[in-house]
Structures are given as structure tokens and as C-alpha cells.
Length: 352
Image (cartoon, rainbow, N blue to C red; front, side, top):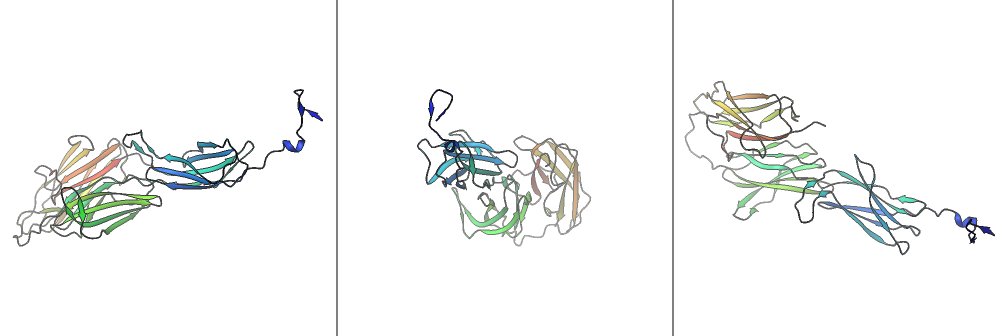
């Protein structure tokens, strides 16, 4: 007979004070929605007190996001766990911040002596859609598009086009969507020119980003110019862009110098062009231009081309875009639908 020190008779034997065996680890599942992860698990134990759900990212340690306690004894069957939102928002409000990244979850069964975890499951969020997807130039048989990559977890970019009937309320595709370009993770350029369009046609362009968790896309419409037909060949300089505007280096860091370059060509039949190009630098959500440059070109012969470069000393962090007008003696066309007018969007941000 033993006493427990409280003058009360203790009836437990030494064997009854041994630790309980660890609970069996559950089998966990993670599903990704547009803005959240759903965590659930299958109970594989008969001696657990409850379950815990932990989360981590590549930059953070494990954090407890839920504890499930069963007051009536061990749980059985499949349990629906927390719905973890990776979008910060207030009830009834628009989305404030989309936290793009890869998240890892683990589910454990526990009792007073031990916790047993299933293997962690890591999944990316659904990619954020590109920003500022827009038409920046339209010709007879070409359409130039611009956008900014807005995600770090996409596996592929896909650019599709369909011939469209643009009505007042909606855009209806008149032919199956056709893939005209694709790029791998973080590999899309900021501009792309579709050189396979037909004159006097309306098109809908869809830019899709996707990974194993899902996909998102943005859309824009454009109408090419009517074919000039049998109009007489121009004897005046007829300037157009050859390729896209380029930045060197491609990734611009705050207060670091960079160079903007572009190529213009003259398709005038008999004239030699002697003109100025105009370069306007804008900051998004800011009225007016931040900087304006005018560059005098050397004479350009018919069917000849030239390259212009402008160097900037540096810009503060932010989102910017350039308007370049060949022979910019007039104002930049706000519709950006002239052959001799092009735009380029870019971001100034610290490097990795």
C-alpha cells in the first residue's frame, strides 16, 4: 500500500504511471482556392486528445493556426480544418493585399505526452494576374501589347487571341482561341507584338498565368486599321517602330542609371526624313510627364532605319511608363494607335 503525500490512499500501481504511446499521425489534405487553402485530415489514432494545424513559408518558422480539442473523447473520420486565407481583407470590402507565395502546412494528433505529425504539404497560391495589360500600338496587321508581371509563383504565361465581335456589352469570340505566344516562369517580356493579325479586324487578347494550383487571366480588345488598298505610295517620311522599346539593364533599380533605346524606320518612297523623336516619361497615377526629351535624328533614307538611345541618371522606386513618338513635333496621341507612337511600362524596384 502506498500514499501520495496528501494523506489519501493511492491506488495506482507503477505501471499505470507510464506514458501513453504517441498517437498515430493523421493523413492530411490541402486544397487551394482562389484566395485560400482548405486543410482537412483523416484521423488514424484512437488515443489523441485533439489536433493541431501549423503553417510556415520559406521565410518563416512554423506557426500554430488552429488547435482542435475533442471534449468527448477521440475523434473518428475526416475533419474539416481551417480555411486559411492568403488574401488580407475585411468583411464586405475589396481585396486589400494578395500574399503571393508557397505555403506549407502540417497536421498533428496530440495528447498530453506527445504530438505526431503527418508529412508537411507545400503548395503555391494561385498566381496573381498581370497588371496594366493594355494595347499600346495598333497597325494594319500588327498589335503591340504591354503588361507587368505581378506574381512570383507562376509556372507559365500563355497569350491567346481570338477574332472578336465587339459589342456594347460584351466581346464574343468568333473563332477558337489561338495560342500565339507562351513563356516560362518569370520569363515573359513586358511587351509583345502580334505580327499575324489581319487588317480591319477586331481581336480579343487573353494573357493567362498558371501553376499547379490554378490560373488567372486578363483580357483586352483591339481593332487593326483598314487596309490602305490602292492609295498612292507616300512621298513623305512614314515612320514606324521596328521591334519594341528596350531598357538596359532590363531590371531597373532605384537611383541607378539605365538606357532606353528604340529603332525607327522610314517607309516613305522618295523622301529623306529629317525629324525629331519625342520621349515622355510618366509615373503611374501621376498627372503629366516626369521628364520630356527631344532627340534630333540624322536624315533617314527611304526604307532606312535608325537607333536612338537616351540615358537616365536614375529614378525613385515606383511604376513608370514611357511614350515614344517618332517625329514628335506634335503631341503624343493619347489613343496610342498610331504606327509611330509606342509605350513601354516598367517598374523601378530593389534587386533580389
